[in-house]
Amino acid sequence: MLNTVYRLVSPGRFEVEFSNVELSSDVAIVRPTYLSICHADQRYYQGLRPPAVMKKKLPMALIHEGIGEVVWDGSGRFKPGERVVMVPNTPMEDDDFIAENYRRSSKFRSSGYDGYMQDLVDIRPDRLLAVPENVEPNVAAFTELVSVSTHAIRRMDMIAHKRRDTIGIWGDGNLGFLTALMYRYMYPEAKLIVFGMSESKLADFSFCDETYLTEEVPGELTIDHAFECVGSEGSRSAIEQIIDHIEPEGSISLLGVSENPIAINTRMVLEKGLRLFGSSRSGVDDFKKTLEVYHQNPDLVEELHRIVGHVVKHRIVGHVVKVRNMDDMKRAFELDQQSKAGKTVMIWNK
Image 1 (cartoon, rainbow, N blue to C red):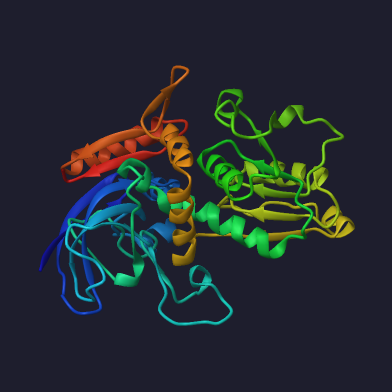
Image 2: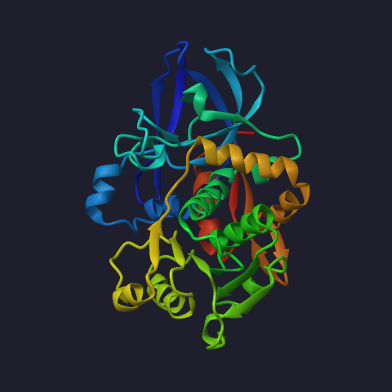
């Protein structure tokens, strides 16, 4: 079966390539319908990764957040036309101790392996999950990013001690919003406090108990555990502030991605006996849990609509772009660059 792949060959430049998709009992064929642009995709598109990384990774089809319709499934698990979310992580071996998203042998789409910017995606059937009927495609498209938050929350549940009266989340961007929202619905009894740099963005966290600008945090405020969702150069000050305000033996989940090493106050980490752990990407079980929370909480799904293609207080939050050719692809990525918040979703090939 002939397939068309749209690969990024250099910053801002896509080229078309053709490939042959082999049909077998181990493969499903999915036609992408809604794709969501991630910050990682933007770093490749803009050429913001180190030159050695760009040289190693490209050419490559971008996008690892998306849904599609099943065209053919050799395993018989899914019927043609069924709407599915695609899991970008593909484990290549079993391991009783290391999760699939941390195994060095796993393949992750749009990070050294072709992502979903294709006419057809050949994918293992165990990497597909049915999308709940109550979830609209614009929201379902970025389920992968929500599952990253779910993964971090589940890891916190395993690692942190059981005093969880007050949870702090640093970061008022997409990742902070999704982590706070999922934590609210998974653990509604906890007091949830969000810390950010933008007063207008913090206004979107109305479902939380308290919000603070990072420069106005009361000195006496304390939290039991924290999630760092800032990344880049801002992660240093965020982690420093978390260490200042967290109670002894608290746990800190690090989610923000930084290209450069950052300094951490290890003296206070030792003095307080803190646990710092990283969370990256997600696996099938995290997707399943995310879709389960979607199904059980229609109002959560409504909250997620707020970060796609809306205008909030004269501020554009995300974009929805119809993509039929490479000019449309470039326009979607450029609009996404201009957006200060929210998700950009590409309606693919319709």
